Image (cartoon, rainbow, N blue to C red; front, side, top):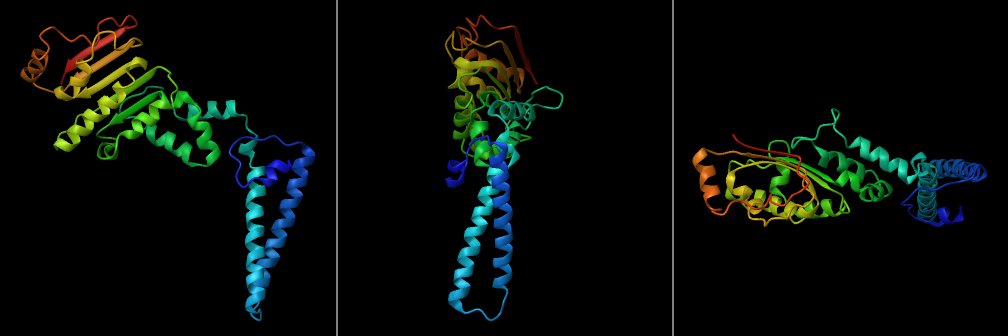
Length: 263
């Protein structure tokens, strides 16, 4: 127990015996009483500057001690890592269990990671919640005006698990946003050897980095859904730039479902 009392910050779970819990609760109650006494004493009007400064210092030190003791007693500290990890995974699931580009998985993972250092550490050590990316221009517009380096960091936390990518990159205005869509595609394709499901809705030229991949680039791919937003002539223009055909999906032995459509 002494090791916990000496730490300014506790990042992980801990286990205390009943007598240790009793000791800490008793100490916390005493500290809270002392803090209340110091606060009341500071309210007196006839204190000199030296005495006031000393009381403030003692009060601040006592409040720090109270925060530390409450941190140790926090119920979340006594939940085993594995159980908390499972809870995080369940909290990131859609209510209907169906992932789409509109699902706000970024918001759910961010909420978990921002609660405290301990939660962030456990969340970042739970690869399952980082093995899916759901992005839609309509639902997540801020993502398309920010640096996409976060995608690399996100996927690296998946620790090599099979990836599922749900991307709606239909951007109607601005070359800058167009480039952003291309950067997102390039960022996820850097991990193409891990992609199990690929669902993309985009304009034709956004698909070019994908179509230019050589065969055998997607060894784990099981499902692919491509929706190209264009006129027939635009689609033909893109396809004509590959006179030998698109090889990206050749030699993908795991593929079970494949769908391509124009909208």
